[in-house]
Amino acid sequence: MTEFVLGSYRLEVDVEATRAWYGRYGNATGGCGCAYCRNYAAAVGVLPPEAAAFLEPLGLNLRRPGDIGEYGPRQGGRWYMPMWHIAGRLLEAGEGELPVAPGVTAGFATDMGPFLRNFPEPCFQCWLSVTLPWVLAEPEP
Image 1: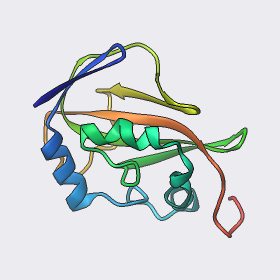
Image 2 (image 1 turned 45 degrees about the horizontal axis):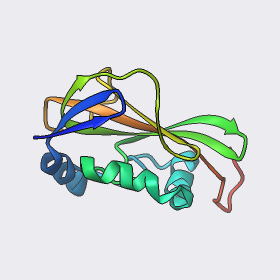
Image 3 (image 1 turned 30 degrees about the vertical axis):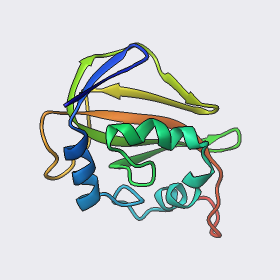
């Protein structure tokens, strides 16, 4: 286990178990084929490199979330909250969101959903809050 202190959050992470699960089961749309999730997969590359750099030490890949939430239009595009499970423990839950990069914030929680099949336990969840442009050739739903 590796300990991380990120803002007011303190994490204990099994980086290899987390990375191994996503290497086996993760995919670019969080397992969904809807237009919003396909747009996330197509547009996520526009995010600042700091977003991927924040996730990588935790064993996470920006392009392979466990789940993707889309929450409607927002200035500059669509509001997304991709989520990842992390093998380990959330030792101290911080308050508020962590600034990661311009337009990108993060947080961690133990009240999770949905659970990912065969994910190592104990675990907790990481999420990002981002705005992405609509890049698919099809119109927004």
